[in-house]
Image 1 (cartoon, one colour):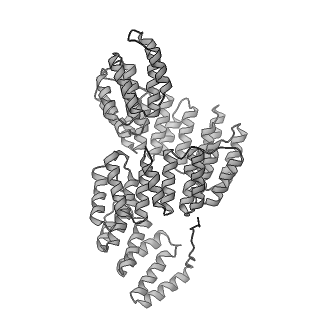
Image 2: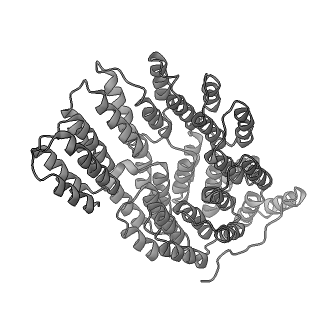
Length: 543
């Protein structure tokens, strides 16, 4: 908290007889300082002083206080202030919608905009990008299209920020072609729009299309900046395309842009995502030798490399580095540390880090719930999920339910798992994804309800994938159900014909059920198809 600033204000404002203008700047600075620090009690004390001074109803201060309460996640207080400002004041709408979208209250931002639509107040171009951002994050394409219509109606499409927000919204909603049409329709393209379009292409795996935009924009007088190049580097790194990563660095240098720590972090994160963990650690060392200091994003991007191979020694080294550099308390770094320790089987360390976090985001909760679920502590995972619901159920997302359904599956809690699957859809509006269906099949299969599991797969509104059929196949092996195993194995073989796993599992199932003839034929077929069993190996490193 900015106590020095508070003291200065107290000295400078000894009485209530000072002019409004002399009060305005110091109070504004103090509200903004408390917002940055999320100092709720200090902000509330300042709010009380503004009420006493008769300043709280001024739209300037009220708007600042609305933003402060949203920053502190006190939406009811923000709405109380909002309701006290005259309805005709457009600024209150801009502040409320913008603050909600900026701090992750996307549904609330959309709700506020539609509430505005019912009032005799016209929207302005400053609020539209915030609503579009909310639509993108919620994948609310239809709502985004309605906002697009509003933008066209009020001639906002000529504004660069509105157009860039439209590109971003359509990209996040999977409509990359529509995003490109918006981009191509711009009379005066700028760098913001270019970066939005490049990011959209990269997010959909069309990195070369993104790169092709660069020379076109250079010819039209728009010079890509470091954000443009780093987005391209991240895209090619995620595709594990080392040649194009080097080429992008070369082009970056030719255009007078020097790589920065984000460039290195993008390469490192791409290596980790492609399980090239040794290369990632080597790149991290090269980064340090080149004089770049890692950011919290670098640390949180590198830690999964330790988790994926249970490399606790490297994980502890990076944890120590984060402590020394003052990064350990960052919510993303600590979430990555929780995930790393949990995946290495060190649940006590993971839990200690979790308990000492003053501010937890969705990633933090999910990491700890997954940690308990995957280590066989189903009851603890369920209890933590319930705690998450009680503290802030808005943080629940599709991964939260994947984690808690995994816990139910491993703990044999069939009824609870079925209830949560329904709750996810009816109460939280989360449409089931393939991973949720796979969890449910695994849940029913482990409990021996194989026909229910098969019927569940048959009723799926989307095409089952490898993991769904694989879950059923594993359950059939566990419970010796040959007929269903043959169906599941045939589906897996079509989806992954080069993998020997399902054929080997089916062969073992035949052997277990004394169907020796089928077992021999299955092994002969594997030899004919060139499917060989891979030798076992361990990735566990000693501490």
